[in-house]
Image (cartoon, rainbow, N blue to C red; front, side, top):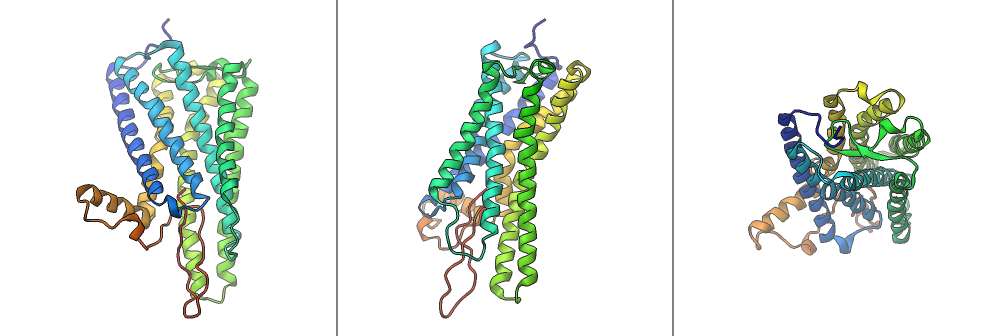
Length: 344
């Protein structure tokens, strides 16, 4: 039996290939756009924004390294490259997936630290700390991705034959400890941390609003961080919702029998999980007015070199996700102004 032959119909294979191609185009274009916007404002970038750039890199990396091979395999009705390509694809998917969830977890923690110290001007997250956090995310993901190659866990083809991942069905006995450890440390605990951080932020904003003297400064502060909280929650929720069905089906394959799940059913959560690389740029564009403005300016710049102001002449602030600063009080003005809020 050829384990790399597709168990789907030829028509469904073509449809899967087209779907993955669309995901690849939107993911690569969207995350490249996020990186370009970050590069344009690199001179004004705050340290926590590097985490947001890191998140875009994980999504872009997954799209570039995985989707072309998956599209070609789907249209060939057979996995291309055999064991070597399967191991590479599974390792890349696991590596970028773990890096993404760890990055989202760190973003939630940083966002919580910033929000719990709204009324202080001291920089809580410096460049050194942020760089160390980014390196930790990649190192953690690399360690877990290498475990199956070292004998703890195993990579293999998916039941429908057009993708490779952790060989869930083969780890029912010898790799069960890996499965439990992986789900606990890379899904359950990060989800608990993310939910706790954002719940804490919401409580903090509510308490600030209730205790305030109804000043414009406090109202603007709460309004700003409430919008940032919405963006952050949507980004984290998008990733968790996309990967939860796949996690449930994978656990079912380990505890019971993977052959009890029809290939068409096992295909759906896998394809849904792959869509997680597309959502972040869309969330930025829908909920961040400044990101949308910068995208339109870039589009106008592509059409006419004289139609848009340069990045240095834009004096409006940029709203993304991680941090917000308060402009120092001036004698004639003490309003809160939005300053360099990082993308998440």
